[in-house]
Image 1: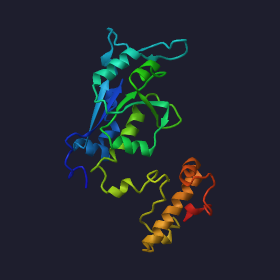
Image 2 (image 1 turned 120 degrees about the horizontal axis):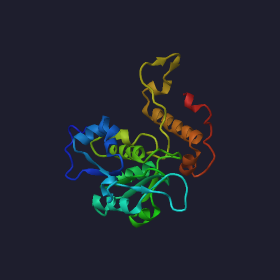
Image 3 (image 1 turned 90 degrees about the horizontal axis):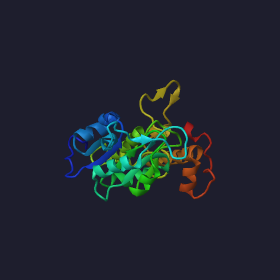
Image 4 (image 1 turned 60 degrees about the vertical axis):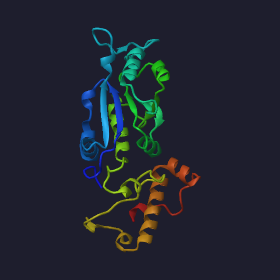
Length: 253
């Protein structure tokens, strides 16, 4: 089932984005699965200009950091006014994309997708005044240990991750359950035609027709990949830091 044959919900999941660059949206969110679902009314997007809440003739939104230092900081009064003007329902999460925030996980994505949809603040410059974070109850969320020019690209990543989990967006429900992080593990390797590519064949077990053995092979591959590449996830999943036995070279098939 796709967005074309799924009726739009009466109250679609909504993302409200506060940004200094509303023209950046929908951007990538307007194409592929997310774009089709957006056009089909399965979710809604509102990009609001923070600068619209500025009060001086220059439409100023930032000022120098208290205590000195480089760069500029988004003013608390302007951003607070922008948040208030969005007039979102009290049950909608208020997020701030920030490199110092809690790392975004698939579990949190699923929780956000199951709700009414968040308001997302996109920071710029050196950040935003701490007082508005506290006064408006913003939850800081990070998509990785690196710094972007602003929160817009991070917001798009979060929204895309949520939208693909909404009912009717993906072609098969299994697509959303048998993938990386859905069970606390990285996804197993995937193969398709041709059966042999540059001397590398598809692992025999995948073309054996034995579904139980295929499932066991995929689980072993997921465990091996997770232990090798994300020991933090493996420790959480297995309840221990030791890698599973026999993981060496398992990804080679």
